[in-house]
Length: 235
Image 1 (cartoon, rainbow, N blue to C red):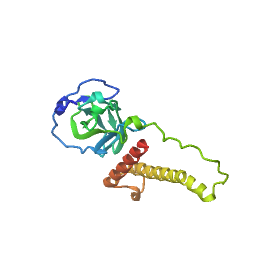
Image 2: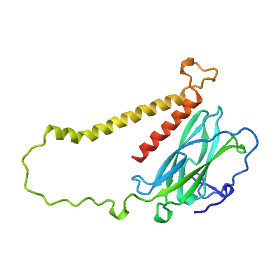
Image 3: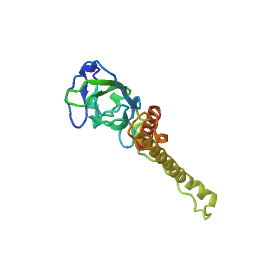
Image 4: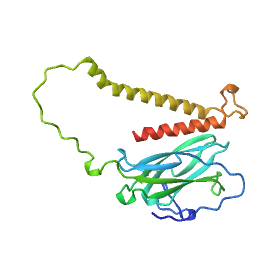
């Protein structure tokens, strides 16, 4: 892994493979807090759909901001939507995939940098945040995965039918999974609704004042939404 200074980092993503991007020094003026979740990325080499994580970026300001993603090891990752714009008081999800989950990369720490800048080609940088990334080894050796347990020798046939209690126990995991999905769906809808509501000090809104929320409530909603999305991707 190349551990360069921030100015040696390269922009990663499908829009600019291998293109270098030197970070400019922070500009004078107001600084925007870079709100991302999770604060650290942990990839699992044995993840079923491939090692990937979801990074949620929230813009708490009243103007659109341009963002881009930098990395110290761009050859090891693919970033979907590595640069773009995030609307005012809105969030955007950035999918990051680890494309080299080999043993030599286990427990090696890389760094991503999220940069926010004003709109325009030469917009000044108004906020930065570094996010660490690490790839964890599989919980079980890869050579043992995909092999089912040996089937015991069949015994004499049993003519006893299953009892109703056993039938209920077999259906319990499916019912629990359905209930959990509905609960996650409800929490996600509530979080999105909070993010769409206007702030308490926002003028010109046609909604009644009781439906105006605070910035802290929006941050909590963005946190919960990012957590639910990450849990959904891991399953």
